Image (cartoon, rainbow, N blue to C red; front, side, top):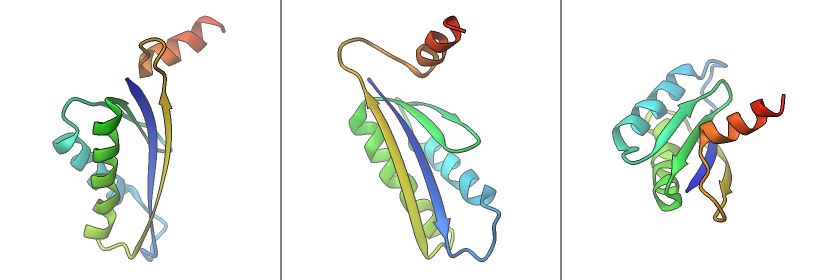
Length: 100
């Protein structure tokens, strides 16, 4: 199972506010993120699940700002694909919190 963090930023929108674009991406994720766990954060969205499914849904999410009128979109992706043991979003946070 993989964990990915994605940040999709529309450029050239004429406004510094991006919350409507974020909301549109989150709606798309809720509709097409079947089989994936995801968590919205202040700086991006964390997605957990099969890597092929994650990449497919990120591709869909990248298109959302264009549909919403953006002329340019910058998408950043970080992927943690650990195969020696099962990990999850919650497990990663718990591991750090136990060390505090």
